[in-house]
Length: 260
Image (cartoon, rainbow, N blue to C red; front, top):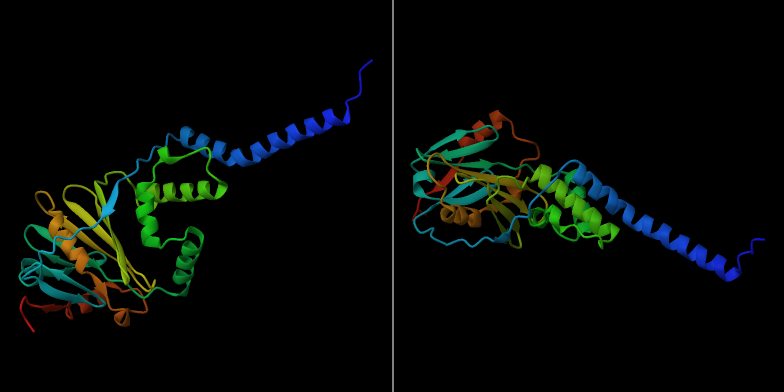
């Protein structure tokens, strides 16, 4: 005849079941996430990120302003080069290089609310989150991550796969200052892009750099990026059309080197 389980045995069994259920609840998201990575053969490398160190070799450069965006450029680009409207940019170009300036509009209430959500959830600004996404790769996964840490890890990997892909990225550098934050991304030997955001959240813009031949010299690119500023009082309340960009092209301000 089978003996009845004692109260102590029942308590132990229930405790074991509770532990198993608790472990299943805790690790199920981890197991499912790892399964999806393996199933789809996803491998995202982490990219080293360092601070943007501008050489400061801007003596003789011209001060430029396009709408709300101001920056410095070498004389051959600012004064002697061509100016034209690109796909979504205003371009300064010479026979060997191009700088494209993306003109931002004022970020509306919905965009500001999304920015606030990002800061509230991840405790960092969107620009710093971009930098963090480059630092994060699939090899950074840990089974000991909390659910919140796992969600953050997954979100950073999604950014690294879609919005700011790690493939074909050579270097990433950051500029974090009180009024403006930015990330300089060198995509290949001839191209780079500087994504910047006003710390107020009012504007998001970019500068694109491309050498037509030969390697892009990052030293002068860093100096241009370091000089970028945004006058929020000049921001448009709506997205700019091609016609708007053509009109803006005629209002570009260039203060020659040594000019008043």
